[in-house]
Image (cartoon, rainbow, N blue to C red; front, top):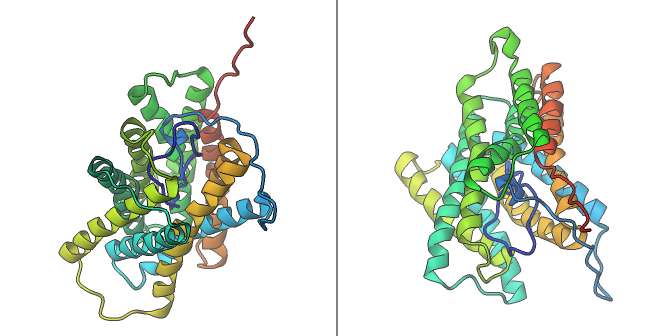
Length: 353
């Protein structure tokens, strides 16, 4: 779940899972999100869009199938990070993720014969966006999963909309607070405390790893606030902007890996396949798929993928990796998701007299 770069202002995108794509937008996600992949993570409300009509002769899977595939891909991203760290350093896992994600999106651009951004001014802002939405959060999640289960990392990723709501009240003056959104923020905070077992004095929870995962989730809304202020309305398709952003993140993580890690002496099979899948599928293909969903069913529906990611991440961690699951983890995750959903609601506009 990765978070992409700028988008056209007339089509706000959904919250990134960051890990992702934020994330994705995440994303968001979006591990991911991104994610993460959304301006709503930075406080921008999603608007309802009419489903786009398919061109005659095109063969596309039903949007519900693609929605389910996207949820699974981003949900499994945290498992792939965990497996990747078993063979590679965290910076190397993050590097492989953005590298193969960039290659996937560049392949799409090549098929479409679509150019990358040309303005040096745009590339300058994209470099900051790459740092905030890819380089830093992807690295932090990889470091975090050296210490905490992948399921906990996926739940921490779900706090990105909560961070986004809190930051938007300060950074985005047009985003007015409401009682419901404040209630969502408080509910989400209660959910985090439930996941961590606050009544037990946080016993059994690695504080450092959890803090790194929460900090990674905080990066997504910060990055989206920057993108919204600097790149909104920039010419270029979302795929081209995101491809350029991932290229810049690849350069940044190559330098970080060269300075802080040594070159791998071997390439173990499963960690290598995990990193390739994490980049090509979880960062490249998933972002492309999400853009299609936003165009077809609108950002309001597409952003709902954010709420499935921690559920799938937890299920994958327990069933595939054998991670332990206590009652407070799923209960706290549901409370976090309920709070995140409340923070994304907006008052219904009154009809004009």
